[in-house]
Structure formats: structure tokens, C-alpha cells
Image (cartoon, rainbow, N blue to C red):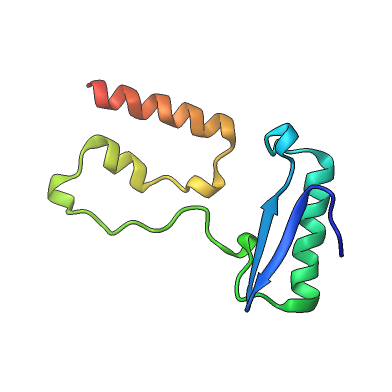
Length: 103
């Protein structure tokens, strides 16, 4: 399958998607989104790569820190589920954490 806005290559079981809109500095467009979704579908149907980008977690887990040394910010972050935040909630959280650092 050919794509207008990206290149798809395979190295073994690894699928490599390369954005290819240099004239637009690889800015996201509806056409690019469509190409990415079609490429992901192609990977599911055909080559069966070992992992797809949509299989990977957004954030890697961090090793737990010692409770005796936790700051107010670390305590607040422990209760946050970053993948469940809207962009607005994430910004509000950042400002709240910044305020805690100032305290």
C-alpha cells in the first residue's frame, strides 16, 4: 500500500513509520492521520510487527521512591493517573504542583 504523507518500512517484525511532509515540517493533517491509521491496520493484517506504537504505554513506570523522603509534589503525583487527564486538567495540575514547589 502506498501513502502520501508517510513511509512504511519493515525490519523483521518491526514496522517503522516515518512522517514524510518536510514541506510542512511534518505537521499533523487529516491526510496524515488517515495514512497512519491505514498503516497501523496494514501492520495488524499483514506483517504482524512485534509491537505497534499504539500498543506502547505513554509513560514508563517509575521506581518507587522512599516514603520518608517524599515531598508534597511527589505525594500529589502518586495519586495522579496521567493517562486519564484531559489537556486542561494536566495544565491545572502543573500549575498546582508549581505552587507546591513554591511553598
